Image (cartoon, rainbow, N blue to C red; front, side, top):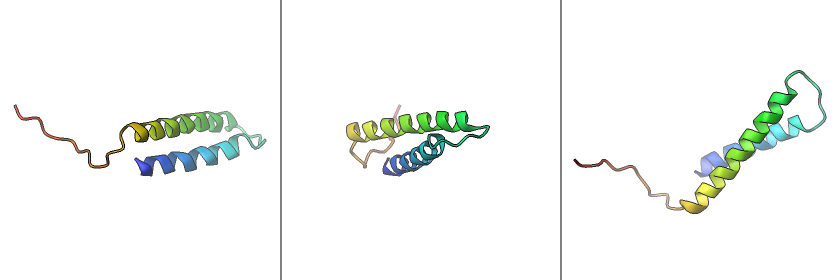
Length: 64
């Protein structure tokens, strides 16, 4: 989970810096939308980390 949080933080910061720095090019709206998506994913991953702190959780096979 920490890996995803840092990835989303880096990508959100990068797209935010590019999208809201005042540059004008053809794909600026796409960059701004990507910033919003990655910022939301960052918040979701941080909230999930608060609720599911146990790193030893593993999937278990259900016995029938």
